[in-house]
Structures are given as C-alpha cells and as structure tokens.
Image 1: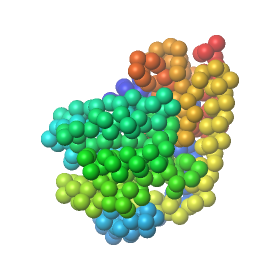
Image 2: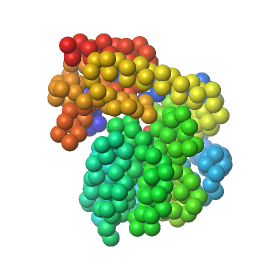
Image 3: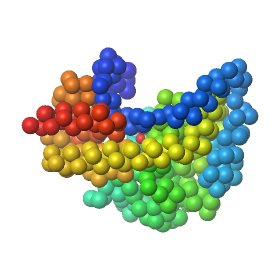
Image 4: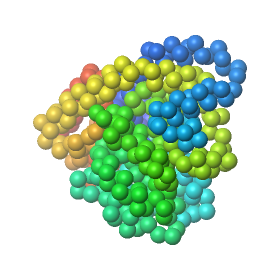
Amino acid sequence: YHLLEQYHIAPSDMENLKARLLANENPWGPSKKAVAAIAESASKGNRYVYKSCLKMIEILAQKEGVAPENILLAPGSTDVLEKVAFALCMKGGNVISADPSYMSLVNTATSIGATWKNVPLRADYAHDLTAMAGVVDADTKLIYICNPNNPTGTLTPIEEIKTFSRKVASKAPIFIDEAYLELLDEPDKQTAVGLIKEGHDVIISRTFSKIHGMAGLRIGYMVAKPERVKMIQDLVRTEMGISITSLEGALASMNDIEFQNYTRTNNKKNREYVFAELTKAKMNPIPSYTSFILFPIQIPVKDMMAKMLEKGVGIRGYDIHGKPYGRVSMGTMDELKLFVKTLNEIVS
Ligand code: PLP
C-alpha cells in the first residue's frame, strides 16, 4: 500500500489497469521454458535450495568471468541494494548518487541515519562523475551509480565509469546498478564487471526482473570482491530468501537466448514507436536505452496520473528539480497505443 501511495494509485485501480506501464516490467515474460522449469521444480519445494544455489553461482561466475566467491545470489536486486546499504551505512556517514536516480539504496541508507549527497546529472543526462568525485570525503560510505539510469533511461559512457572507479574506489566502495544492462544492444561492452576482475572495490547488481521478465519471481545477484560478498553473508543469508522455483526458472531463462533476444528486439521496437509518438506530440522525450521513457509534462504529476487512470492507463510521475515528468514503461503494442491515444487526448 505504501508503494501504491507513492505511485498515486489506489489498489483497486492497479487491478483494473488496461495498460500497466508503471513499473518497468517485461510484458512478454517469463519465458515459456522458465515457466516449465518452475512447474517442474515446485515438487522440490520441501527442500532448502543449497545445492541449486551453488549450481547457479557457478554458472553465473562463468558467465561473468569471475570466481564463485565473487557472486552473491539474492531474491531480486532490491535485496542487494538494501542489504549493501544496511551493511555499509549502519553507522551513518554519507552516500553519493546522481539526482535523479533510482532511490532504493539511498532511501535505505538515509532511513538508518546516513546523509545523501545528491549530484545533478549532466545536461546530457550522464552521471556527473567529476562532480561526484569532488564530494567524496572521509565519511563517504558508498557511491551509487545506476547505468543505464532510472528514471531517465540514459547511459553514462562505460569508459568514464571505469576511469572514475579506478581513481575513486579506493576511497569509498562504488555500487553500480546494472538492472537494465541486458536491454542494451551490446551489454558485454557496457558492463563494469571488468573492474572487479581488476580488484577494485566495486559492487555490481543484476536482476532477472527485466530482460528475463521474472519481476514477481524475485531473483537477482551481486558481483563484488569476495570480502564484500562475505560482508553481506555474515550479516544475513540472502539465499534463504530464494525459492527453488525462482532459481530453476532463472536457470532455464538464462539458457533461453531466443527469449532474451525477443525481449530486447521488441522492447527496442516499442520504445522507438513511443519515442516517435511523444516527439510528434512535442513532448520532448529523453532518448532512452531502457524499457521506459521519461518526458516533461505541463501539468502536476498527480493530475496527469489521475487523467491517465481514468482511461485505465498506469504510468509513473516524478517531480525532478521542481518540474513534473511522466515515465512510461514499455508494454505490449496495444497497451502503448492506448497510452499514446490517452496522452494525446490529455495534451489537446
Ligand atoms: N534497480 C533499478 C535501477 C530498477 O529500476 C529496479 C526496478 O525497477 C531495481 C533495481 C529492482 O529490481 P528487482 O526486481 O531486481 O528488485
């Protein structure tokens, strides 16, 4: 309920949406192969997941080119974001992130007593890494980078992130949230995982919620130095939050390259459609690399959401540096056509 309040949506409206474009969910997932594996694994539900967890960790380590000790499995990347914040900000200090950015880690950190040093994005919507480096001090516990960034959908050049991290990670650990990485055309060229292989204190989170369409199944992972993995494991046992069904589903989905390509291709096609329509409507959308598009609006967020909801369309609204914005997630083409039609009615 708390979350829906933030979304300005009543629980009953959430149930009745004709176009659910508010949480960056994958409208095509999960893959049929994942669903079959989930159904089959349900009968193993009487057992704890230890063995399947180890298998998954080995497979992920191989995929990322790191050792199994570098991987921590978790029930979604939110779990990683929150637990890292708990582990590192328990005694206060400050966290640095871009503004606007994804707030999960920062919100947890500030709830337990840390302060937030917010650094506006650059005019090109990339992280202002020079300014972020400039505010690091002896009390900095964490630096958070979301790449591609939510809610802007924009990308910070990976070479800039690498240069920044090589200089700054010795002063404070750098958390890089790569939730939308796999939706890029060439994810391997944009990941920061190489920094961990170089030995830097960089923590990367990934999720099965986006490209794999498994948001409701809850599985994700962290790649970091073994000391960081141990730091979390000593505090909490993240694997105890994972079910055998989500594990087996994720394993099957990783092998389903066809499904991942399908999502990537259709996400891009639909995003191009929405971008073109928003441009036609003179809405000045921000070019996006993700499964959502941010655009400035001329009416208050609450009013926009209410007008959209009247037609069964759910999107997100944000107040960014005092100005209202809408954020539409990619859905099926039918959902997006309804969004475009409704938006044009509101604008006119
Ligand atoms: N990180 C970013 C940038 C996101 O946008 C989201 C979800 O929208 C998450 C993390 C959380 O994902 P998960 O479902 O893995 O908890």
